[in-house]
Image (cartoon, rainbow, N blue to C red; front, side, top):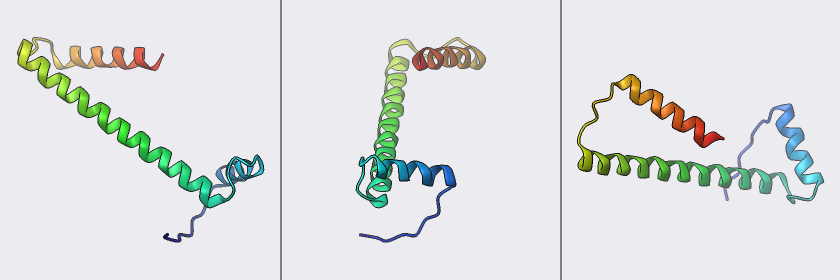
Length: 87
């Protein structure tokens, strides 16, 4: 296992300390490694989501052809969809 020396901001250090005090993790290393694993998992899920959206767009293009909407119209639709998905 690699050994690194890192510095944390005061709020982050306090938060990690609270995780240890709550017995959620047995060591700072365990907490940091778990947080990194979670971030890597989320990154992978994000990449998978973008990949599936690109495939969906390609399939839609094959079925329907090019859109007659302007770039601004498409951008507005995308923002509305994004806002809906955040709710």
